Image (cartoon, rainbow, N blue to C red; front, side, top):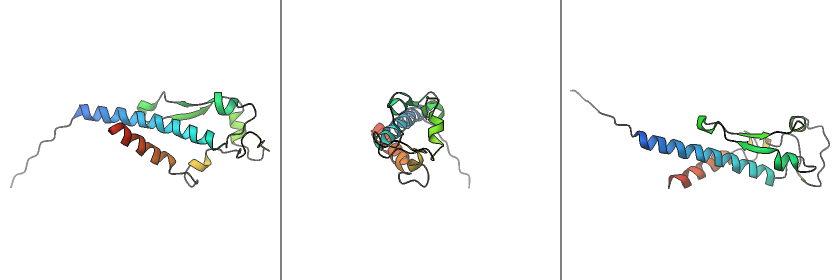
Amino acid sequence: MKVTSKIKINQTAIIAITAKAQAALEQTAEALHTEVVQAQVIPRDTGALQNESTFVDTSKSNQGKVSIVSSTPYARRLYYHPEYNFKKDENPNAKAHWFEDWQKGGKHEDFCNKSFAKNMRRLMR
């Protein structure tokens, strides 16, 4: 018995799905940034770190990578030093390691997966 098969790859559809996945990735990063700001976990004095200096970098989204960047020189110091006494008047949940709730083992660890899936479903319509 001889069996043959022929596969035809629809490159146009693959390109369209890839573009939608890239858009969904960028939207997921924006949603995470918004979620973190609304959770009021970023230490805040004047609001510069949270509002003007933290942004989503999508320059490598075509490679499947996005980043949430804090461009202030003191962001690293605040993030990695939980021993600091953070003011709680502006952001009552302010703390170091403010992304930990959205990382593996955190209480919102499935946020990005769910957000990406929701964005893909919406974009695929």
